[in-house]
Amino acid sequence: MSSRTTAPRRSYRFALRSSVFITLINAMVLAIVAFIFQTSDAWWLVGISTVIIFIICFLVIQYRAQKFIYRRIKKIYEDVSLLENTNFADREIATDMRTLTRQVEEFARNKKIEIETLKVREAYRKEFLGNISHELKTPLFTVQGYIDTLIEGAHKDKAIRKKYLARAQKGVDRLTYIVNDMDMITKLELGDLNLDKTDFDIIDLVRHVFDQFEMKAAKKKISLLFDMVYTEPIMVHADEERIQQVLANLLVNSIKYGKTNGTTEVAIEDLINNKVIVRVTDNGEGIDKTHIPRLFERFFRVDRTGSRKEGGSGLGLAIVKHIIEAHDERIYVDSELGIGSEFSFTLEKVSSSRLDSEIPGSISDPKPA
Image (cartoon, rainbow, N blue to C red; front, side, top):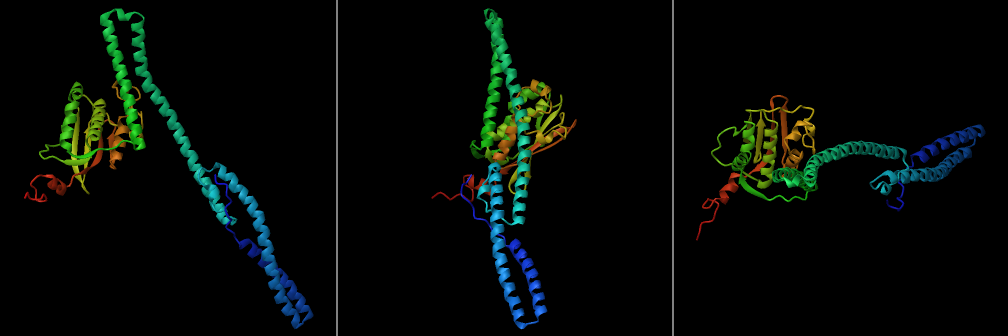
């Protein structure tokens, strides 16, 4: 907090009104006296006395009011500045009541908003700590249980030892997965993750992700398909590795909550201003409207029990949102309970003129000498 004293912004309204009021009373008294004596000199005396009285009253009242009000208001500013995390103490001290009232009301309004925000953050912090402890506790207890069993003598049986070590390894893999995702989302939130943007074919990338999760989808008899046959590439400008991560997370969620014999469909459509929108649609369980605003929160799960059986870190959608926003793009959700869900996000499309300039022998390329 700054220790310097800010010069007050003075208001003369109170002294001016008070002086006029006092002067009028004195003028009336002097006028009555002049009327009684009926002399011309008396009227000149009334005029001169009125001016002198007004000046004296104004100066005395202004000085006294300024000192009286300033001392008390300065104390208010000092007390308030102790609670204010901004430079409240550096503000110009106003002795004008309207200005002071406005400043205090603004301060109270900002403090109310700040307190409400802190309450929301505190509730979120408690829920986050509870969620992360649950996510880490499950694999930790699993690993601990198998290791304790092996230490107590199960290691002597080669078959049991191999089976328990394999299960403990799965628990460690899950812990590593959660920690890596937490590290990723922390970097995204702090803006420390640098994007390596290149031009690539989004159709080819989707096919690659389809191949990656083909076996996982086949276990639930879910078909991964495009909405139509794409014969031409659709080039976009983005970080290919991060967009692959986005598609992977969306497909994993679609398979996780999809219905047996269901479908997960990907569509790529043109938008205005050299943008494309990628839609990932399924006919699975769907999401209740009340849950949609919280879908991208860390560790938030619509199903607090069943979804954990499917694995995952609980950070997938939060990572998706941050990756898309790191590209200065938008992500959307449309879902209806019992019918299915659609997640869509925008990407920058490579303009045809830029594509032509990158093709050898194109019109924009210089002719070889």
